Amino acid sequence: MKKDAIDQILDQWSEERPDLNTASLGVVIRVMTLYRSFSRQATRALEGVDLELWEYDVLSALRRQGEPYSLPATRLARETGLSSGAMTNRIDRLETRGLVRRRPDPEDRRGVNVSLMARGRKLIDKAIQHRLDSAEESLQALNAAQQRQLAQLLRIAVLTAPDDD
Image 1 (cartoon, rainbow, N blue to C red):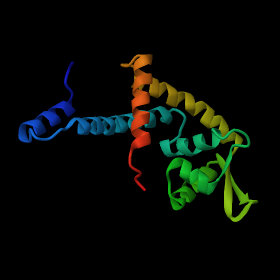
Image 2 (image 1 turned 30 degrees about the vertical axis):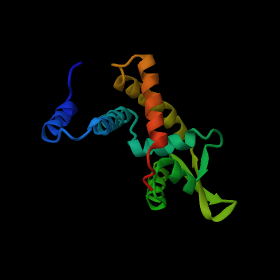
Image 3 (image 1 turned 180 degrees about the vertical axis):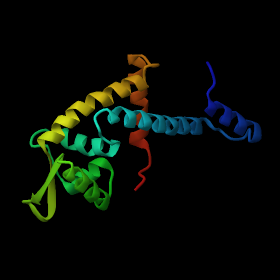
Image 4 (image 1 turned 90 degrees about the vertical axis):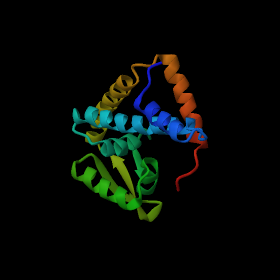
């Protein structure tokens, strides 16, 4: 099999420190490299619908909820891995674009619910196809069985990874 740049890094470590087992580092560096590449591809794919990746993430989290496409802001922050302060800023920006609406939470007078507006729903419904096409292009070197196998292995890694909190 052809070697990649990460193999060169690992080979160099093996030369310098033959006592080290670098197999896990090879996996981690490759995943990190793919993350950067996939993020760039996703960003390019969303340019066609005038969305930034963070906007997609927020709209997607709301759309996946089903009707009425609404979440408390705190849960939306959790769903997208953001702090409440960062989420407030993002909601402000999406609200300015007419993609979401914020309303007081009837069950928590300190909280707000964020709802997808019709314009936001239309945009995210279009954007998901761009993301799917980009993902498919990203993995075109793998057949369907390989993609399922890789997904299963990555799922195990995700489920057993130490919490970063």
